[in-house]
Length: 138
Image (cartoon, rainbow, N blue to C red; front, side, top):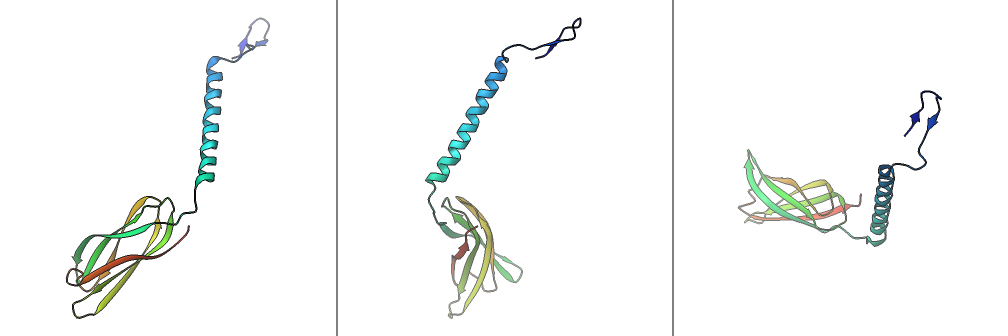
């Protein structure tokens, strides 16, 4: 805080800072130290894990001439995956199979992502299989 004496035009500053300045400084230092400690702990304790990817069929609907199989891609691992390929196949009663594939751009750690596959055959009339077939590390 600066005080100006109007007669002498000199500035007089207190010898010690205000208690609010000291409190703000201490809190800021504690926050920075806590953040650095947390980042260090995460860096030291994180293992090199692989994504744990599972695919579930959420819904099947007919849209015009195609059947849409809506999917949920679950990643239950703390590791992230990118370019996750999901393949689905419908096998009819006569043994003919139709394959469809999609790619999920990003599967964040411990999350669920939605997408879909398109088929000409009715997945409800045959045997439907879906699975994740590959990914890349981001």
